[in-house]
Length: 302
Image 1 (cartoon, rainbow, N blue to C red):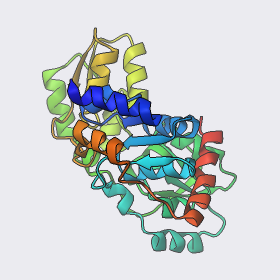
Image 2 (image 1 turned 90 degrees about the vertical axis):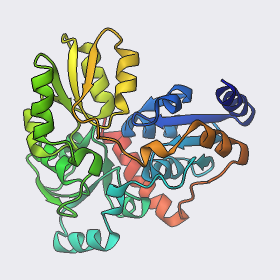
Image 3 (image 1 turned 180 degrees about the vertical axis):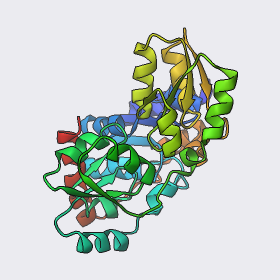
Image 4 (image 1 turned 180 degrees about the horizontal axis):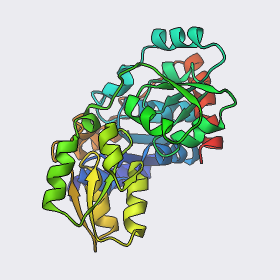
């Protein structure tokens, strides 16, 4: 394929690496050097020796890569890939919560913008949220912006969790309903239900296993079952089918599609490499403060 060949040529010429989230289009996943969840992508961004990082994900992910690599050029193929959840946490709201709970630690989901991360003690991902929260010294933890992930953490932590904002959510996961689960189970009665912790509480409670996207992949590969209902963005099914070809996977909801994640295409990846833009820029003072919170996560949130 001509597009892929040209992308590979430019990657080699410019010492570039392509990082892609599990929700990307299949063809973008296939051209990436690494495909993973937010935690894995953060680790890869911190470890890369590439001069250019092409980040196929949403804005907060590319910002995190830029924060961890101040001397590298981080590109995002389509600047319209803006995470709705990340927009839900305003720094003013976070400052108010800190003033109301001065002795609390602040743990923010990585699905936040850098200016919010700069106010956090630590960030977390869906893969390590309980471990990070439980590692904090404070008995009260301000946590945001996903209320559904906060529910997941509360079930696994003795800490008092204060959620900011109160009703933050991922639109793609929040629309996966218990009715969707029941309908899927009627069609596939022997399948195990594996869901993401951004799903609503009643869907989490019905699940056989809850995990981050890459955690879902690991579970399905290692588990003895051969058929699964997958409760997350449909893009993950491409990776599941590639890595566990002998098993059968069904989306709980075929409408669980993140339009922002799907904005990146091969032609946009190629254009980003050719032009070396759009460049992700994070203000230096914000980047330095946010970097502390991200690096602390990489230390404590294994």
